[in-house]
Length: 392
Image 1 (cartoon, rainbow, N blue to C red):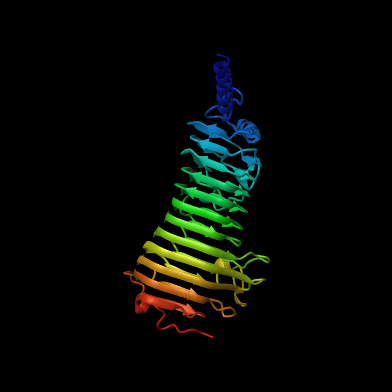
Image 2: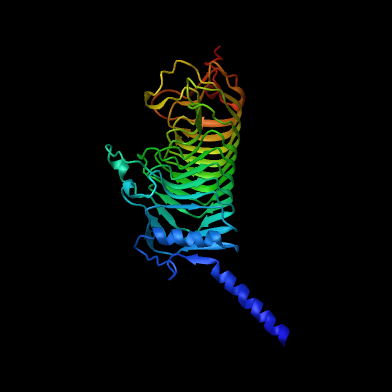
């Protein structure tokens, strides 16, 4: 009989521990309420959850909540979930944010799972006002997050990048939806820099800039089943603007669809690079395109807004790049552009099974190549740089 009561005692203790591992921002302990500012309630709930030695979960239930900002820092003592079921709203004006360049962020957290079907609404109205000068904040920032999963969340109307990933390792994004106005600037859907082992899968992105952009130091990046558009396409770069940039290496983009984007699959580097850089082992495969401008584009003369004289060539070495099974329609007559650096010509570039058509009235389907000797396999003559020989 004594053994029975000992078992019941340990069962009750275990149950209490499991129950105590859920930290609901609307509980009496934290006092958060729908349609109110829960900045402090969320901070307190995170503090307690992060300190738990048991796996913990912070819950934001259904409803609308306002926050001036939440920079949630680790390291935590155990795996931690953040279940966002409700709708987060940022201040309309960034000057009311607790941190001017970030709205919600996670830093130095291991084994984080962010999920729940909720929305991070940046309430960006700045794109409507060309005189808007306030510092713009990233909707969701991940800094030095490891072994984590972000799934089933929505970023809406971010004032800057919807999601920014820096210094992270082994993080997966899955079933994420990102929406920003087509004319909003600097709204790269997911921007990745100096990170390793990032996977983006079954994600839908429509913004005013790149759907996904990779900065320097992006390595072992996988993008699969991404739906992109509107926006500027999927971009490696821009690279080569700054000194001490780390190599970009090991990128796979597969089974993605781009619709009505300004560019398609793009690698872009700045001319006049201040230091040598590397972009290598980059593979685009099984891509569908619908009315996409510049579908296949290596641009080593990237210089938006006339920020450079374009006198000196890029010193970013691009190598081991493949485009395979790319099919669809182009919005521009020049469907393939491989415009490499005259100082460091592209090496080992291959195109295979490319079937892109153009039915517009701005000319015939064609291609351009410079400072590259690409290998073409089952590529129609207009797309194979037949009239654009290697320049030296």
